[in-house]
Length: 325
Image 1 (cartoon, rainbow, N blue to C red):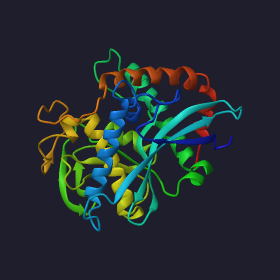
Image 2 (image 1 turned 90 degrees about the vertical axis):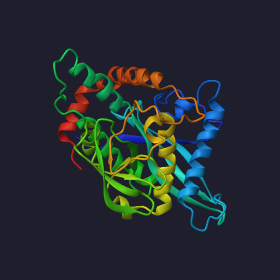
Image 3 (image 1 turned 180 degrees about the vertical axis):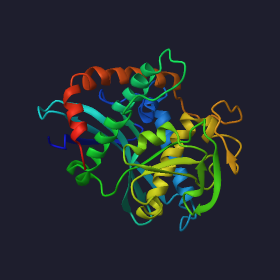
Image 4 (image 1 turned 45 degrees about the vertical axis):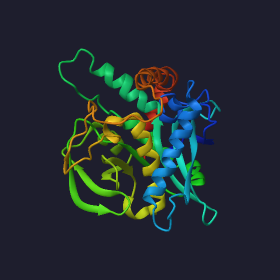
């Protein structure tokens, strides 16, 4: 069996005039912002926050703090299962591009920001919930995340990915609120102090099946560490500006989505446990519907089950059993 499905990549710019398409996962952070009466102001404020954070981190040869701006592309990945031309929306991410207003240079950034996946919605919001329904203790289904991991690796190793992106993705996520993180002495000039978790999380295990490693860093003037998932060598495979583009983008979205952690008024110490019930935090001037986001994740997981998992069950099982890089 052929190890490769066919992937089609489409991209559009994310600016204050952005409107989500019919195929966009509405649980995606940027799509959530781009809805309702405040949509344009939401987007404008978020993009300004990203630019300001980027310039604060890229402070060298930047005396006025306005040398750079970040352009964002929404990258949508569609997968053709059986070669019939009918595609399923598999992955959506943001890609950063850096504009240097001093040199008039456009620098390619990193793809992977705000990573979202319909199959991941299915795994966490349908499969995992149903597996643990009315169970006395929490457990993980057999082979949990294996199909998603293989589909992701298939995409990363596809010709479509290599034609569109020069480097491997970096996926930046929030830390887990049920883990404790300890600060180490390792410090990077851009990523900041490295933290180590007390134990592995389900998210770590899930992303490991995608072939990704994880390291935790708290950038300068941040209040909590971020989780960076990557292939290869995070510290040496990417330039400082590339890393800053990811930090400024994802820290901004985390401040909006999880202000209790990333817009807290107290900075994480040597021993840090995130707290989503922390009342000592500031709210951004951006409207974000977290409750709706949770409901939509379940809705989209069931959509995946109906239009992807069940119809292609035999093909996917055979492909997964035979898939090898």
